[in-house]
Each structure stands twice: as structure tokens, then as C-alpha cells.
Length: 350
Image (cartoon, rainbow, N blue to C red; front, side):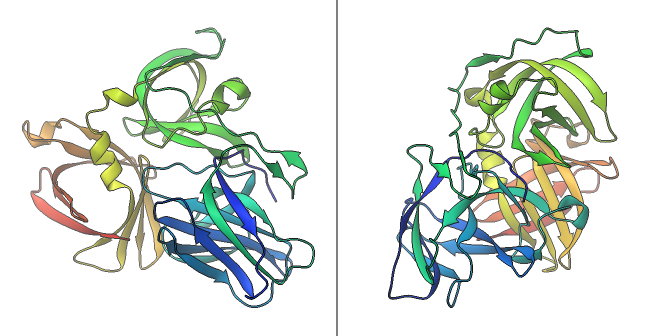
């Protein structure tokens, strides 16, 4: 199984003799959505999501345990999760996925999980999600997992790379989209103006420099300076020389946060969206349709000064759409497609 990166949520482990299976309890104080991964026969399997309220428990694996090691991912609104180096396939809706490779090619996402060691002979196990206070040994990989250090808001980070050395000089305000494995290489990513930018670890941006970003939440606004080293149809590669974190300078941070999560169309229950950071993944009848890169702007040419607006750019087809944000509160998102004046409504799925 592939390694991803070190993370920021830990487990308090405590064996329980009276139960059978694997129990997850939530001691974080906020609602958590949990996925699990495990070996079944000769395959890696991932499943999700279990929604666990603060103080509550759930049992994603029933019956006597057959593995020593299980893996988990826990997400919560406004909190970033980085695991301990174990990649599984996930998606926004409820899922059971066989196999942990070629996730994107199969319409899924690759996500970082943490490890659970139930012991050599345990047939049942209970553990509690808690904020990590220190790095712990990643037992299944036999190496220490390093907790990422989160930079302070409005700080400036410098990698030591010179500008104009690796490609075309570049500077722009980008939205941070996290650090992970992408088609076999490890990178931090950013989104703006309908493009997704990749800064690969040691390619040439120093790994230690990018590791400082790993604990930042998605949609953190930052000024990124460096060189463009390559282009794709909807993506570009960056060699980063400097990042200025502008977390306190984003007037639309609240709107971006309110968009996060799963949505279902008010007109067609088979049409769903999953918004993570500045990416929106759309599905129809549970089949993947497209990925859109998102941005919130004061207005757009078709809005005649009305705003704020949501700009969506298709990663696959490169079409761009401008929507007036009519409502984004109370679990509803009402968007008006500019130029057509059509209202599209979505209901948030908890």
C-alpha cells in the first residue's frame, strides 16, 4: 500500500473485552465523518461514511476482527485531516470500494488515512478520536510519523529557490487545495482562475518547505510566487520560491466554508455534488460526471455588477459558468446562472 504523508488527528486506543468488532468513539467535541480501510482476502477495501456525534460511538466493523491493522480517516467542518501515510480510495457519497490504486481513473479520490493497531490477538477493539498532541510511531510502516507544523496566518514562507531559474516567472493569489499523492507523485496543490497548480515535493520545491503547508485547511488564501515549469489541459506545475499566507484577507472565506460538503439537487435527487476546498465533483445516478474548479468573485461580466458570484470552470471541458449566489444558508444553496436567469437549488446532506 502506498505512503502519503504525516497527519494531525490521533486515536486514544483502549481494548474492550465485552464487545465484538471495531468501535469508533468521538472525543473531539465536533461531529466527525469517518471512513475505514482494511484488508479483505487479497484486496484492500475502503468504506464510508459513518457520521459520529460528539461523545457518541459507531461500529463500522462487526463480528470478530480478522486483521491486526485497520485504517481510518475522520473529517469535520472547518478542520483539516492529514493521516499517517496510507492511501485509500474515497468519494463524497456513501461507498464501498475494492482496491486502493488508480482511484482517480475509476472516478474516486485518493485520500490519506491513519493506522490503528488492534494488537496481535484482539477480536474486538474500541478507540476514540482525539486531537493529536504529539507525533506517534506509525506501527504498520515501522517509521516515525512527523506532525505537520501549521504556519501562522499572514506569514511569509521562503523555499530558497530563485525566480526565473526553473521556468516562466509566476505570481498570483491562489487557494490552497491540500497536499497528497497525485498519479504517483506527491505534491501540494492550489486553485485559481479555473486552473489547478501542482508543486511537487523536491520537484524542485523542497519537501521541507511544502511540509509546512500540510496542516493548513483547504481554501486558505495565499500569494504564491515562483516559476511555471509546465502546463496541462487544466493544470500547471510550479516551482515555488515564496508563499505569503493571506488567511485574514479573504472576504469570501465564510461563503467558501459554507459550500463544503455534500449537496443534492432540489429538483433531481439523483444529481449530487461534493465540494472539497475549491473543487466540486458532480455525480448523476451515482456516476461521476465532472470536476469543476471554483472561485468566489465580487461579480462577473454577465452579472451586471450583482454579486458575489460563484465561478465554475470544468476541468474536463474547460467551460466556465457564472452563478449569482442568491442563498447560501440554512442548509440551502440557491444559484442563478447568469445570462439565463435560471435558479438552481441544492440541499446540504449531513
